Image (tube, rainbow, N blue to C red):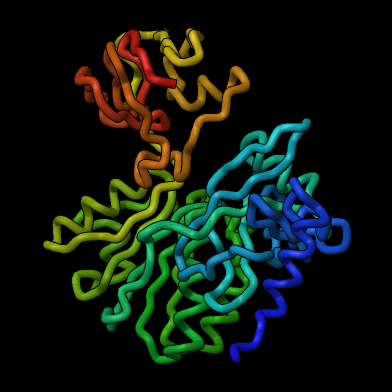
Length: 350
C-alpha cells in the first residue's frame, strides 16, 4: 500500500484551518521569505562600491530560479505604500546567492542605495536576458562603460575560477579610478588568474574611447578580430562597439543600460486608455510607460529597453513613435509602451 504524502496531508490540514488564506501567508510571521504570491528575498549585506553605487546581497525564498551569469531580474520594493519594480543585472557568480549592484539614479535605485539595509525585503521575478557567455569562445573581449561592468562582473566571477587559463581582455571605460566599480576586485582576479587582462580607460585623463580603425580600442587590443566581443553600458557607447565589431566582420553581444532618445517630432502627446476611460499626457521626453508611472499607474514591464517585450499592449487607434529610432507605427496591434510615445495621439486597450 502506498505511503501517504505527509507534507501534502499537513498542507491540506493547514489549508483547512487558514481558509480562505494560503497557509504561507501566516508563515511570514516566522519566515519573511514565505509568500503565496511573490518570490521574496531578504537583504543579508550591503556594500558601498563607490560614492553612488552599492551592492545588495540577498537570500531568496521559494520560487527563485538560479541565474545564469550576465542575466538580470526585476526587483520590487515598497515605497510610500506602493510596490515599484525595476530591472537590475545580477552581479554575483552563478551558484551563489544573488546580488545586485545599483547606481543611485531615480526613485527606486535611490531607495535601494540609501534606505535598504540588512533585513529589508525585496520582491523578485525570475532572472531573464540573453547577455550570457558563449561557452565555445576561446578568446573573449569585454568592452564596458560605467555600471555596464555589473553583468560582466558576474561573468568574470563565474568564468575565471572555472577556466583559469581562459584568454579574457576587459576594457573598462570610467570617468576616474574612484568611479571604477569593482576596480580592486578586478585587479585581484587578474593577479589570481593570468588569463584575465584588465585595461582601465579613464576619460578624465584620456578622453572618450576612440573606436576608429586606428583608434584607442585597436591599440589596446590588437587581436580584437579574433575575440568574441561583449559590450555593456550606455546606448551610445554600445552602439559604437557594435559598429566596431561589424567593421571586422564580427558581431558583438550587447546589453544597454539606457536608451538614447530622439527628439520627438510631434512634441507633447496624448494616450487614451480605453478600458479605464483615462487620458494621459505624455511629455516629449517620456515613453508611454513613464507617463503612466508619473501619474501613479503601473503598467506591465520588464527590461524597459524595448528588448524583453513584457510591456506589449494592444493599440486600438492612432500612432506611436519609437523613442530610439524615431520610426512611426500606425497599424493597430501590439506596441511596446517602454520604448514608444504617442505621435501625437494613440488609444490603448488598457
